[in-house]
Length: 98
Image (cartoon, rainbow, N blue to C red; front, side, top):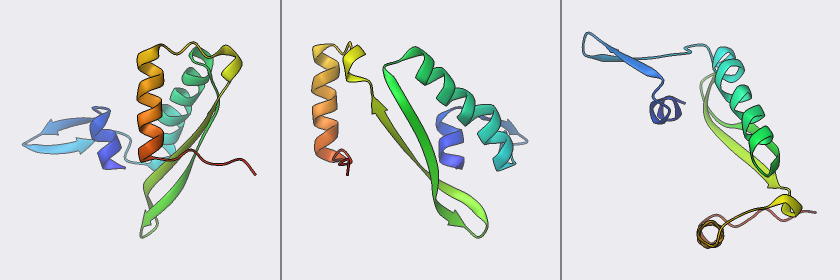
């Protein structure tokens, strides 16, 4: 989780040490993750986006998995976007629907 917070710049440096914002997981989910999910769904062609905890250290969430689906009818990807997605699918194969 600290890696994600670091990527998002959710820390300050006090007395030479990093202090991460949202020390409680529930606050991080409420104020960052859920708000981001809602904004992504509202402003992009992604129509479903969810996350789950896939790794814990003790009782603390340590790793999250995000899953999403795209409304292909409203897709407006550029050729560069499509090329990136094709390369990404080679590294992380898309999940097959059952």
